[in-house]
Image 1 (spheres, rainbow, N blue to C red):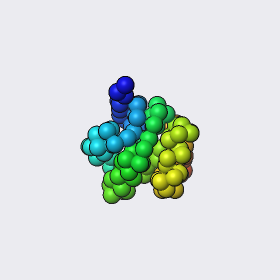
Image 2: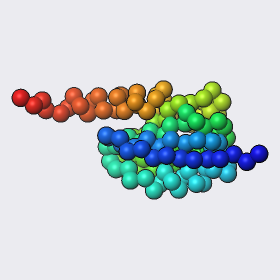
Image 3: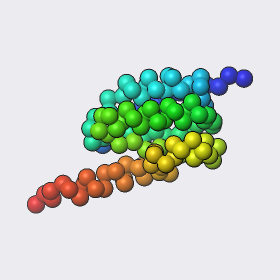
Length: 126
């Protein structure tokens, strides 16, 4: 039975959440790479790739996440993944991708961690 892949882009203060649904494999990885490369991500922003609804990931999917990481870093932006199911987490660990992509349980948690150091640098209003 064919699987359906869908992505949603949600702008947030300080960056973007890119949510995926379906399988991240050799059939969907090229489309993912194109979609992520087209995001208007700029220096100092955070890209959160939410994998909560991803039911499967193979090495092609892991490669697509590395490509997304490289794109983000080239734009001087940060990147993280969220919502890893055990099967997806295992693939990212086996391929070594987990070592280069920070992980948070949720997008909210990722943005809180990302924005906290930036907020402390802002001058206080008096």
